[in-house]
Amino acid sequence: MLYELAKPVVMGVVGVLWNPTITGVEHIPEHGAVILASNHLAYSDTVFLPGQVRRTVHFLGKSDIFAGRSPLNKVVARVMRGLEVMPVDRTGGDAAGSAIEAGLSVLRAQKVLGIYPEGTRSPDGRLYRGKTGVARFALATGAPIIPVAMLGAFEAQRGRRIFPRRTPRVRAVLGQPLDAAEIAGCLEGAEEAQILRTVTDAVMDRIQELSGQERSEEYAADVKRRLLAGKRGDAPDRETGPTG
Image (cartoon, rainbow, N blue to C red; front, side, top):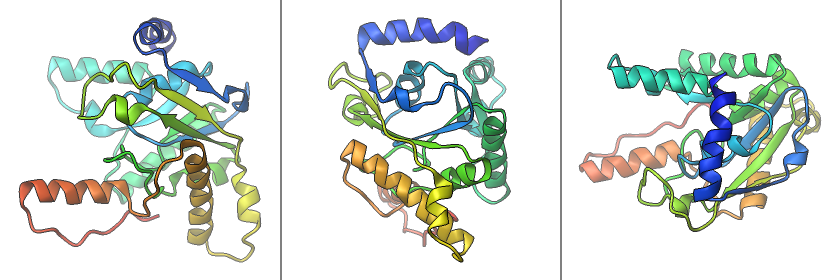
């Protein structure tokens, strides 16, 4: 209910101040399960993308957003839930399983799931290695994957600004749907890990085609940890990438 009430008000303000645009919305089916797989450049992505899509988009959110007992924390948590953001623990292990189940529940209900395959915001505007959750969702449910490129958001919100600058103008570009089962069908006899990686890489390839971003084969989270360790002067630990 809060989502439907807040969306026209928020997007009315966003339209006046930032005037974002979107192309390719015709690729989103009117009904049924669908996955929007987007690059992630700035906090504003989570407003500018779903705000311009007619159907309600359900995103998975870090559980720490919903943590805390202060009045402000409780208000934020309530608002986020009202905006269809679901709290999930993304620290790995059993937590990864809970995130998968949360996403599957959205798709099994024939709704729209929004996901950032990179797992976190890009630290430098490049497109990073995708995690395989997007492939798991698609293969388990048969939902098509719509690749999405957010353009201009990194430059508009550079410097960890709370609100993006009014220039450059932020654009969302949606591409043709990808059929994960069709991609997997070309890998007869392959192990599950290879299938998941191939599907995920195909999604990231399509996002890169739409965005024109420079590509990195590292995980964004690993790069952020390395940058943070450098700022603190810590000795870098041996990093292990996410399973996927």
